[in-house]
Image (cartoon, rainbow, N blue to C red; front, side):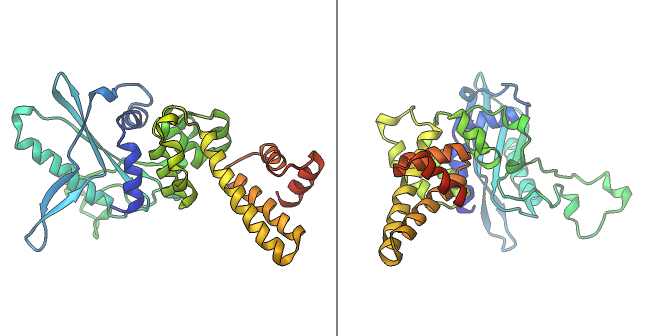
Length: 305
């Protein structure tokens, strides 16, 4: 599993986030699965490789749904930061191992295995979603009915429709709004239940180390349950101000104070645009951070926005 996929696993491995994902994507927002009924399932299974040796295969995140101590379903989530053309084969192996395990424990009863693939790449899933689609040669129509196909249930997370995104209310909504609707992200100013996991996922999706540097600010006992999206953005922004200011000073010594000042302004505006801030919001931040008059800040914004 890639590092990005592992980082994303941290957030969706939280039971409340996992339950909401299942309820939204499988049950169209109906609260069928309760986080209190979830129990971590196996992420490792074994298979015999071409070398006739026993090999391990790992799922990203797996949870049992229990009622009165009995298993009703096994839900599995697979994170993909890149599109894997052979994903139907992988999922067939995962699900087959899960059903094989049930055959060895029939006293527990037989239950469904549900697997969802979460595509976090910036491209829609454009390869086959079925096992039959991977065959080198097209099967004869008569034999097709006898093939046990495996179909992928893929969700392109960067392209979810607005009405589906709005069914999410917890931490994953922050991630989805960041990817799809940053203006809404700022307006909602949502409180983060799992700030470290959210920040690490933002880092995985953006590659921006500034997010990792902010983790200590949001994981102290004093901040527990009180960290909002705007707190995170302000932290990110403040660091950008400092770095931009330092860069500007260096440039100022070498190329003159005016050019150095312009470097600072450009860095601040660039940071704000990356975060999805509106023109008006960025204008206020520029004015307050650099103690500019309304006219000065507006002139700079018109020049560099």
